[in-house]
Length: 311
Image (cartoon, rainbow, N blue to C red; front, side):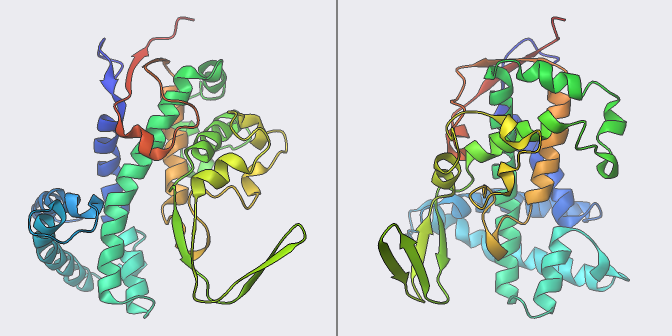
């Protein structure tokens, strides 16, 4: 980005970069090159089915894209077979193996395993790229953000970002900046959960009971934006100087419970790494988004120029 004088389409570029990074996190770095090309092509053809509204009519994108699902499943079964021939494959730390171990332990069926792999492939790339796009947007429009970030991240980048050596104290504002962007982005607008036992709720003088078997829909976005002091304001300080608003139950941009985002910690780390690189430049945003923009708001193009620091 810094090598061109023209504005770049942030989300478009980030999605490509994040997809390459996530591939390693999901499959490791030894996925056969020939099969990877075939799988990536099939995934590209299947993508409309993942994002489509579920109407199963012959002329819809969903109906047309679903024809690629059996071929994808076949390639993934081939990867399972390949791993079975590798010594100590169960100790691998990539996401595919983690889900495969859960399947083999009886925690999910084979079909659920395949569905989870596809969900991570598509969901992780889009949501992480959206978070990073909102980070760029905030860096360009929050007063004094870049100078404060730059003061913390001006050291040797290689040492600063080594996974086991991240000094949270020295990156206090950087970490808080990322947390606040993520809070206001809010994750999914709606999440559904099934109640497994009766739940009693008291609100003032009124009492309610949500019976077991009820499907409950709530908004992560509304929870993140409404249930904080000065909730609509961009205030990284709410996580600094001993403040721990990120430990409140309403801070849940990645979801809650067993079904929260499995890539939560990786997404946070990628975001911190990204900010440390971004702070090397001044950021000029054309037609910025609002600071409380959600993930879906990044569907429109956000064009940005990176400039050499003026000081």
